[in-house]
Image (cartoon, rainbow, N blue to C red; front, side, top):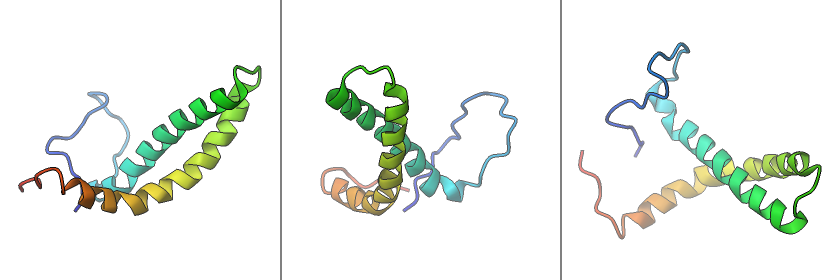
Length: 95
């Protein structure tokens, strides 16, 4: 089941770049989500373990890249399982 919004989401009213077809939503959404989540989690983890350091940005970017490399394929595999598990608690969307 692919997630497609009912109305297109516009970041800027006058987008000048060519958009990917809707069929890529199932890959692009997890890519962005895993990037954002791994960035937040790796920053918190790095801050907790090292504290504020002069080279924190460089250290964090390295840990974030490793985290994202693991997070993206994990999200692709786990997302269908999470959807099925969620449907145990939430009504299925109607077409």
